[in-house]
Length: 70
Image (tube, rainbow, N blue to C red; front, side):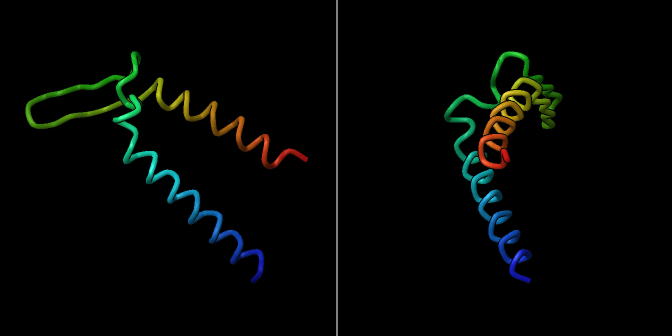
């Protein structure tokens, strides 16, 4: 149970960090990078944040390798 509690705390912190990043993402320019595809058709908007996803993936890979490297 000790490990499960630790897992819940860590996953909760990760969700909080992701939520804060999503709140401030438009202010720092994420989801509006060149290469992010936005399709507007009437009242509907479809977003494909390709470049943003690649950048987030690179950052997370570096951070996770730093923290969990054995």
